[in-house]
Image (spheres, helix red, strand yellow):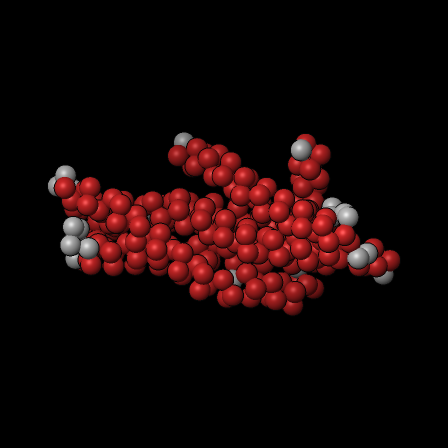
Amino acid sequence: MFQNIGEMVVLFWRTLLSLPMTWRQRHKVCEQFFEIGNASLLMVCILSFFIGAVIALQTGPVLVSRGLSNAVGGVVGISICKELAPVMMSILIAGRIGSAMAAEIGSMQVYQEIDALRTMNINPIQYLVLPRVVAIATALPLLVIFAILVGWLGGAFVSMANPHIDISFASFLSALREVVMIKDVANGVFKSFIFALLVGTVSCHQGLITRGGPRGIGRSVTKAVVNSIVLIVIFDYLLTRALLS
């Protein structure tokens, strides 16, 4: 475990040192950005809408029964922007994109394509890791902003449609604006940026250390997703503790 952590730290550091080469890899960055961002919009939209809807459905009747109907919008808004949107979208991207990264790079490692790159004096980190890390670190925060807006819309829709809540859109939006500040949205976006770096680094690292043919590729994909989710949860606590203090 400590060896893997050390290798991931070294890989991340080498990726940071390769950032000046991003412009040369701009075409691969744009390709990865489209795969991570545009191709994930539908899933992000569905997931975030129903997350907001479930939060409103669970908390709305309880708050209304206690005379706190004006707090429904604030509860839904703050829970989505600070916690649910960044964590759930990061887990979604880890399962969808992180696994694809690990599988693609792992296949190249197993079939010695990465050795061929080194033979041609092409740095694998600059050619394979850098575009993916830059793309996911750019796309995931944008997806989280979109998810926050859609989640709020889902919460507002349920608050208006459910007879046990029955709150107007104006009341929901007013409560949301009273509770949610710009810094709350910024905290969620900042969390998603850190999670994106974790997912990109872990997935690329698992691909680079793949051994053992197709079975090894499957193990690398599984480890990439599981390790990414575990690190997301751990860093979510650490970042929340730091931001609250």
